[in-house]
Length: 269
Ligand SMILES: NC(=O)C1=CN([C@@H]2O[C@H](COP(=O)(O)OP(=O)(O)OC[C@H]3O[C@@H](n4cnc5c(N)ncnc54)[C@H](OP(=O)(O)O)[C@@H]3O)[C@@H](O)[C@H]2O)C=CC1
Ligand SMILES: O=C(O)[C@@H]1CCC=N1
Image (cartoon, rainbow, N blue to C red):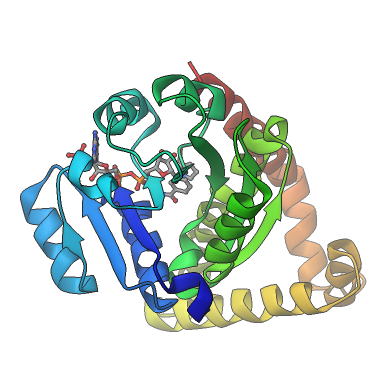
């Protein structure tokens, strides 16, 4: 990591949920120079204090940066790009994490030839367990893509995908943590309804999801086979999963992923 972090100066434009997630990940990875541009002064002060970083307006933040991370909402990207266009270094790489926004649209707002990478992160990056789908734009060198992949790898796994797949990546891994939290909410509610106190229901749910996720990640078996191993003939799991099927839970989840991908396409404008 030392060759990666030495001399690296990162500007993070937008200090919201994902901006802070990436700041925390970069700092944990030993990146010393991180500057955040965040319009809310109170929030900027919170971030500088919590993570030991600098805060500046966007032109100042990007002026010395070799990596610029755009972490504003998709509808704020055009403004954010316009604010930095004249100050981004010509050899910098600009990484956008905005859902739906194409590298071509960001490139069109920057000076010719500036490298733009589109990356779709997720919030588990804050504990080094993120999943990133990364796509280079039209002016990215192999070295610049390698730098971005190496940098993001400090916060989780990275796959390089064709940009045409980014909306699907967003629907699976970008939004995906929320699907698991949604499931956790329902399991906790169901446990309470079945007679547990809320704290016990949460503890049982949390460890069950952690254990099952680790089993899935570490196993060569398919999810279907792992599920089969839990499901005794006409037992409790069978009772649960046939009810899920009757209520259309699987179909609803598949439709939800499709809706997320469609929404990402819409965000492109
Ligand atoms: N949250 C997540 O799990 C994920 C988010 N993303 C992407 O990350 C991006 C940010 O999302 P998220 O962090 O959730 O959103 P937030 O609203 O939490 O954060 C965005 C921040 O950017 C600030 N901002 C707005 N305009 C500018 C500007 N021109 N310059 C600098 N800062 C600005 C906002 O300030 P203010 O509130 O004052 O407007 C806000 O603090 C989105 O594009 C989203 O698609 C991608 C993957 C996962
Ligand atoms: O909900 C959203 O639009 C963002 C993108 C992926 C996760 N959060």
